[in-house]
Length: 139
Image (tube, rainbow, N blue to C red):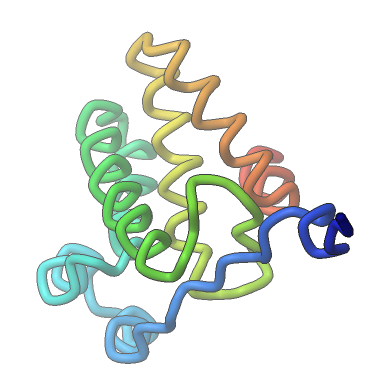
């Protein structure tokens, strides 16, 4: 029995679809809350809310926003064929909202004392995209 080279390489990268309308609203300076309200599946808006609230000292609110964006992103990943593991490249712009939410969830979990969840999220981030982990955890 021959084993395919693809099987040895692991699952292919998952590339989320773009959401041009939500991205355009963001680029035009609309508030993240307005973008999330209009496009609730757009993880980048939730990531921005999580980042903003964490920076303002509201770790619990940041955690809630990050968790929302994380779960919306998981739904999209599954629809895109993701089976619970494999690369989610940072280099693909539409993946960044989910990866940012994953990082924000780890950061907020750490801040509220959920150390195990924080470590699980960081491990998931590192396994999904080493580039995202380096980019997002370096600051």
